Length: 146
Image (cartoon, rainbow, N blue to C red; front, side, top):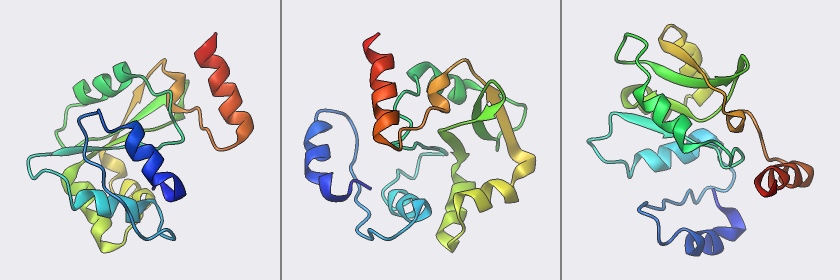
């Protein structure tokens, strides 16, 4: 959710090939935003990344590696790890993510399908670096400028 900065964010990304979808329910949880996004997703999409805006340093190489990761079963739910610590984003099979429509949380879905989780170890620290505070922002900004 973009909150009170929706217009500013929309202008900042207008040149990118994406569809912007707004969750008008400011009090909803992440699953609510995913439900709104699913309503606009192409029928052809069989896997869906759930990316968190507070993890801005995830590398494109990590996203590619997650797409290419083959644990040996086609309905894998892929979670990146950095030094053994689970991170973000998560790559869900679409059919699994559709369960969020029944008001399940994303954690509920992952728990329900724990046998389908495939952890992908990566050297991308961006998968575990959160930006929740001003101090986090300054730390991440410092990584970008050095």
